[in-house]
Image 1: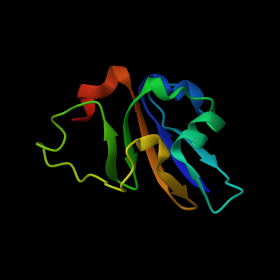
Image 2: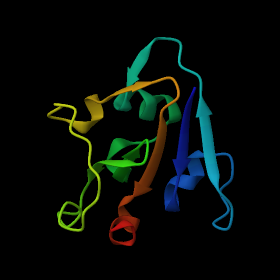
Image 3: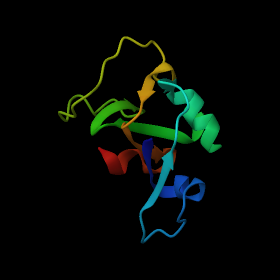
Image 4: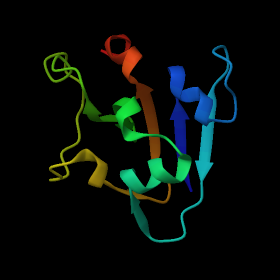
Length: 105
């Protein structure tokens, strides 16, 4: 099972759309691993709406060039495209929309 925390306007894809409540989805995966792109498709979330992705507490992708300078722990898995990142049972994701880009860093 993969835990997906949704923030900002991405909450509409979660269990709770209220801004004062957490919005979490738990996704069962049938295979040993799936890619981030496959998970987003399964949740119905367009990849273009996502600007920051945290995987297990570390920054996987951001549209903000300041993140490394600010000392965020980042993930480098050798993927040219972060959407190809493999996800496994037990992983935790945090997804932030475009309009929240500067709030994260």
